[in-house]
Amino acid sequence: MDAILVLDILGVIAFSISGVLTSMRKNMDAFGILIIAFVTSVGGGTLRDVLLNDEVGWLSNMTYAYTIISTSILAVIFRKRLTFFKKSLFLFDTLGIGLYTVVGIEKGIGAGLHPIICIAFGTMSACFGGVIRDILCNEIPVIFRKEIYATACILGGFTYFAISYFNAPEGIVFIGAFLVVVSIRLVAVTFKISLPDIYKLYDEN
Image 1 (cartoon, rainbow, N blue to C red):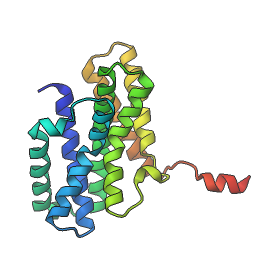
Image 2 (tube, rainbow, N blue to C red):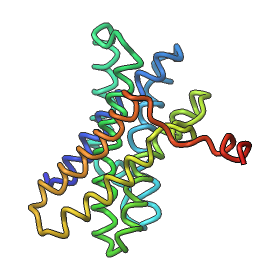
Image 3 (cartoon, rainbow, N blue to C red):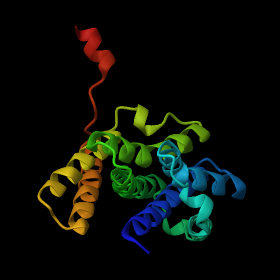
Image 4 (tube, helix red, strand yellow):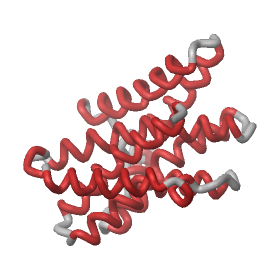
C-alpha cells in the first residue's frame, strides 16, 4: 500500500467520523448517518478525480467502502465516548482537511499540473466533502463563513512546495504540510481568529 493511499484512507476515516457526528447531531436514522459519512469522506476526492480524468478511487477499490462502513458503525457504537460532539467534530474535520490537502496536491503533481493548480486541487479535495455534508444537513458550509478553513489548506499547500524546494524527504514534506493545515485551523478556532467581514469593511468606507 503506497503512501498516498494510506493518507487517503486516513482522511476517509477522519471525514467519516466527522460525517457521523454531524448527522447524529441532526438526529438522522442509520441510513442518513451512512450517507452523510459517505459523501463527507469521498465527496472532495471524487470531484478531484473527475476533473483530473482519473479513476475514482472508491469505485474500483472496495477498501474505501469497507472503511467508511466500519468507521461509521464504530463511531455510532462508541458515540458515548465522543461526549463533546462539537469538539470531536472539529477535531476529526481538521485532521481530514489536513490529510486530504496533501493527497490532493500529490494527485495534481502526478498529473503534471502547475503548483498553484495543485494547491487548488488540495484545497478542493479537503473542503468539498464538508460542503456537501453541510448542505445536506441544512447548514451554511464552513468554507463560506468567516472561519479560517480553506485558507489553512492553501497555506498548507504553499508549505508543501516550500519544503519540497529544499529536496526534503517525502515524509517530511507530507508531515510539514499536514501540521501547518492542522495548526492554523486549531489556532484560528482557539483564539477566534477569522477572516475580515467584507460587509463591515464596505460599510465603514
